[in-house]
Length: 142
Image 1 (spheres, rainbow, N blue to C red):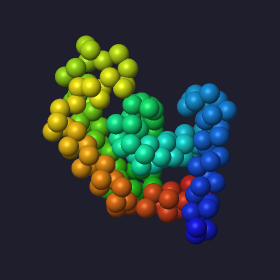
Image 2: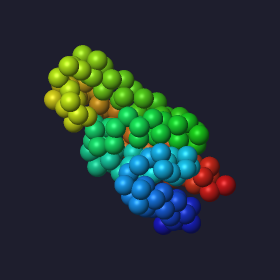
Image 3: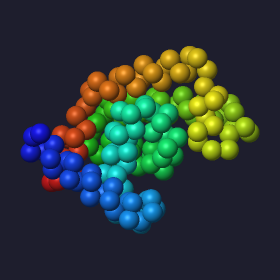
Image 4: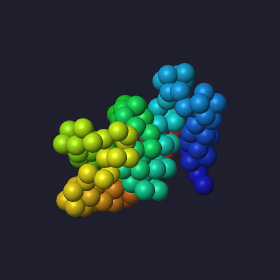
């Protein structure tokens, strides 16, 4: 593990610990800690189950904070990927909003094409066209 990777993980761990201590109340954290915790949740869930898992587990607030953080660190390709995935989820919501009671309901209304598109975009994310850890460490540890 490189020095920057170690620093990055320490930054993320501290922010996530703060979020947990506040019972996942995002508004109780500083903007910086919100962004670090959201980036952690983005990476963990994207690498575990993809965008649907990330979005359905953490919702629109975490997504929006992740978008802000990716913009700040200039992870432009990663940003483009998750914005494309959100556009798919948003279309599903608009089409099925009367049946949707919670985020995980969205998954039931995905078409085969939408699933294939999400799978393709998840695979693009997993290739890490932007090094979130390096960019994040440079920005948040400056």
